[in-house]
Length: 315
Image 1 (cartoon, one colour):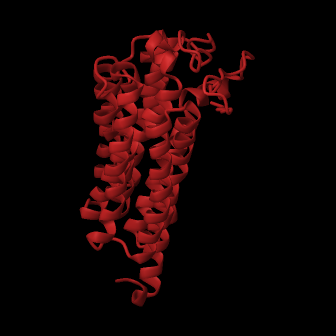
Image 2: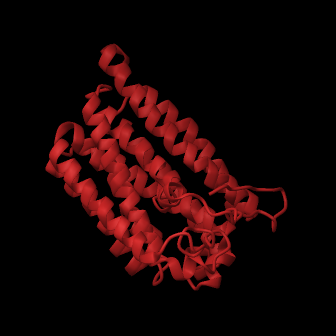
């Protein structure tokens, strides 16, 4: 969904999609939320490359990627179905396929179920059972724990629900080595702790949308001032977690430099949100957090390849 920001505190907004009905293929792709899928794939790919020491078999890479697309896309399609009542009332979501009338709700949920079945079958046959089970667990957690149970009941929805977005890291790791170790769980922790400040920064921008449909996102439930303090606190927790791979000898000096620099920029953005409380600062932090996560995983991959190729560059 296209996103824009202006210098005005009140004019930062995320516009709705155009009213022109897309074709069938584009409609079903929209149900899968491809932008979210891309973010999940970045962390999955990063975990795979780190687990494989910079080398991953071609077909392992292809089948894991396809399985991840099917699993995440299916979960997102079911999310469209479950949130169809509030999506039609929120400005930034009212042009999603179901509220816009581009696809029947029954077709959307059927599509989501089929994609998740295909994902499990594909990963279990072509990769391994652990990767398939983890992908299914991520889908079920997102659907039942986050969307159905937490999202409309508590402002802790994001802090607890963030597990779903961190599981693809474990899927990628398990796909390459067939198991999980300390480094895999450190990567999981990083994504898990990254999620709250990332999502809360966006909800500060679109608070009125969530308030309109009584979804207790943090700024709606506790107010913007407390939400900004929570962003500041969780940002420190996330920043600290990004240093753990080096402290525990899972990563080397190159990753540490990347984590320190990119994390410093993240903390500067979080501080501006905390101190100034402007929507433009919140939206800037949200956008940067996307880049930050990608840079972190890129740093992990480069660090892993350097140490594999030149052991003397490690610790």
